[in-house]
Length: 239
Image 1 (tube, rainbow, N blue to C red):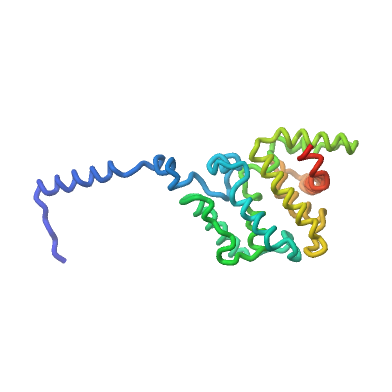
Image 2: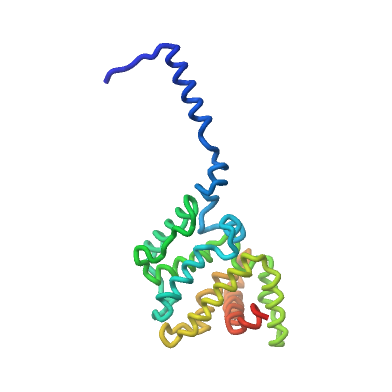
């Protein structure tokens, strides 16, 4: 291999050109500001930060999963209960994160590649499970599981709690629970009752910040709260 020796003047010219090139490169922040690179992954994020990044109140990934399931999966047996292929779920997760970081989230097409419905539902559950803070915020956990004997007082209590949530939590919760009610309405086909849905989603959406020995007791409360909100959806979200 032939080695080329540059004179000191040529070396200076090269350094000058390289310096000019580097100075012309956009900063990371300017690239983010222009929308070429987004701030964070979809999975493992804080819901408020993701919605702020996307300028939405319900994450784009959540809306896409819900829309796809309602389009072609409501009648599938064991919907949300049957586990999808874990490696394919991770593949979808990687794609969602890559799209979020690099381009517009609208570019994620769940019809592309014919994603299996159980993979999509598995990815949606994983999204909620990996949120930095659950959909039901930690600071309201005890308020949500607070035992209120009178049924109508409990409805009012839950309605007030939901209204107190930040918009991303409240509207994402409404979108998800509205979707899950549609899943339950197709129970004759998919065999998903309100109890089954609550068992699947309870521990994912609602959990204490610090795990204790009361995990079995908490699980009962978690399931009951999700079941209650599903049964009283109209009274809690639309009154």
